[in-house]
Image 1: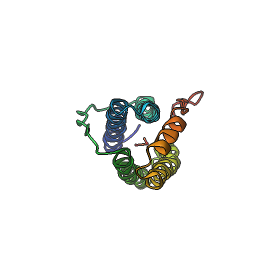
Image 2: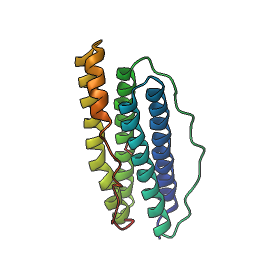
Image 3: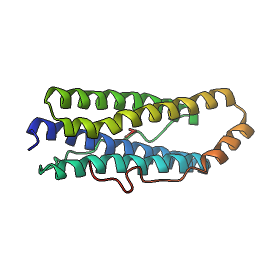
Image 4: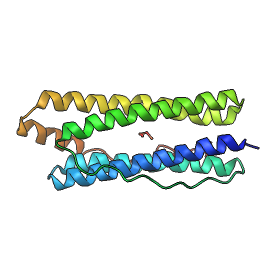
Length: 173
Ligand code: OFO
């Protein structure tokens, strides 16, 4: 049986992942309204990924025989000054999520819950990729500067991203 403080911490992380999904959806809508359909696509795929991250933890709680908690999802920001401002926000946000994930791993270890610790390790690795992706796009946007042609080239590149369920075929934990 999983301890209640761990159920609470995992439920908070489900909420944080669903907030991430909502934030990326708001960013996707912003990009769409700027005519940057490729950025909108990339951010929409990220919205789908974050939803999968949240649901995987939610299913883990259920698999451990506990009741997930439901908290309100915060309203995300909806306006940014530029694609660079969007991705600087993404980079800050993912660094924050990494802190949350590390906190969960530390808690699981402290409570001697190896199953939760193992489940959280997937997220530890995923955050390395999440932060690297954001930093890479920030770097590209800084190099592009005010060059509209290069921005459209990057937009076309971002249009190619497709959603692949990160947990397809995997057991819930
Ligand atoms: Fe769930 O990885 Fe981003 O936030």
